[in-house]
Amino acid sequence: MGVHKPAHSTAHGHDDHHTHAHGSGNGGLLAALLLTLSFAGIESLAGWWSGSLALLADAIHMMTDSSALGLAAIASWLARRPPSALHSYGLVRSEVLAALFNSVLMLVLLGFIVSEAVDRFGTPRDIRGEAVIGVAVVGFVVNLVVAWVLSRGEYTLNTRAALLHVLGDALGSVAAITAGVVIVATGWTPIDPLLSLLVAALILISALRLLREAVHVLMEGVPLHVRLDAVGRDLATLDGVRRVHDLHVWTLSSGSIALSAHLEIRNLADWPDILAAARQTMDKQHGIRHVTLQPEATAPQPLVRGSYPLSR
Image 1 (cartoon, helix red, strand yellow):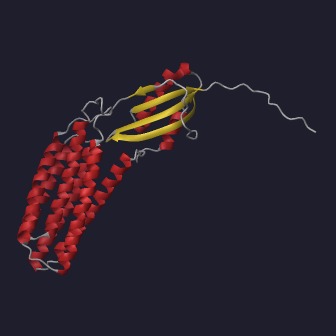
Image 2 (image 1 turned 60 degrees about the vertical axis):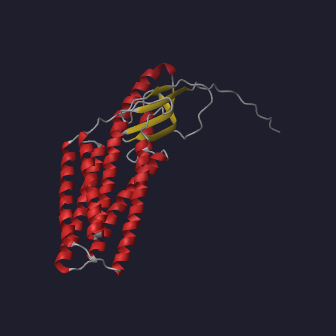
Image 3 (image 1 turned 45 degrees about the vertical axis):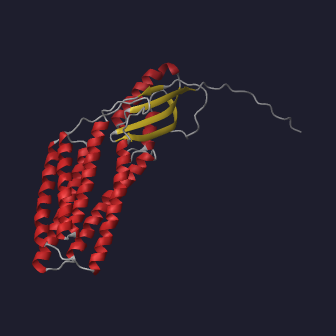
């Protein structure tokens, strides 16, 4: 793969191939979203009434899971929206903006949980342990039901990510159950803010991962699972290709990757075959289906005798 250089202003043949891999809608995502979001509201009210920060933290964690499920559902819906005169790519980036907002909101809520936990270490609160146990057990069952619904639906990257979120939230429910049991058995209330910090750590991991992915996409970064050098090498080794430059790979939306590049070829007459081979290779080897390639035929330059000063 050659060193990148600015594209020439000379007109070249230009072929655009715009195909998108659109996922179909998944009813399981919507059902899981409604179930998770509904119980998150109930659990947050129960956490406020019972005085349990661990229960409230678990409710916030479930809300973040609801956001993840919502993003997956939005991605499935937006994938079917056609491009317009104002948005030639459609509205596929909406999910990325939503992910960015969601991650920032998660960090704000995380700050509230940590601040409240530190305050409660110094000033313990009365906590209704029995209520915490009952609500947390129901939350754990809800998480299992949501995981079951997702596992029986269409198995895509979106549903797999949502499933991981839900399984992580089940750990938050277990933490809340543990806090309730300890309080009922021993009356030791510091266990509640202590375990709420554990749930906060789970939220922090999810928030930072989501923020990193959203910013990476908005900065037109190369998808993390794609190796740019391997893409360039596969293009450069195609029959008839002499050199590859101005190679760019970026994410349009979940499951949709775009590529653009200039290919220096030996003969423009070979371009249709080279283009077909490039599209097939990018799709098969790297999962890239939105491919824009520009051919450049560089004629060999004849040798020219230079003028040299006479020796003295």
